[in-house]
Amino acid sequence: VRFITKIWHPNISSVTGAICLDILKDQWAAAMTLRTVLLSLQALLAAAEPDDPQDAVVANQYKQNPEMFKQTARLWAHVYAGAPVSSPEYTKKIENLCAMGFDRNAVIVALSSKSWDVETATELLLSN
Image (tube, one colour):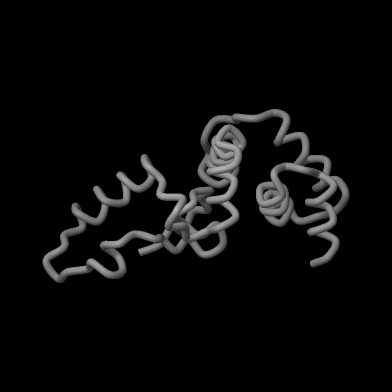
């Protein structure tokens, strides 16, 4: 089980969509139903476990700067899932870097992982 839509969450890989959930790994049982899996996933989305992360960068942002985490998650929901626009400031940073010729997805990942600091995100983009 994995997400095919990109999501910014400590327990879900921002790259592969892999989910860090006990019932999908260690506690899997043949008697599990799809309903059980979906309810567990819903609970994980509502209450992240940053101390058992699938994505360490996201977990660090979640713990160090919860407001930035929320804004980043909202932006990813807007960009990748069609949610309403959430942060004009973040959107402007994305547009500015895209205007320099960088790939939009690469820009979003770089800014998200570098705490929306344009200078360090640009360095990351140029190093790839």
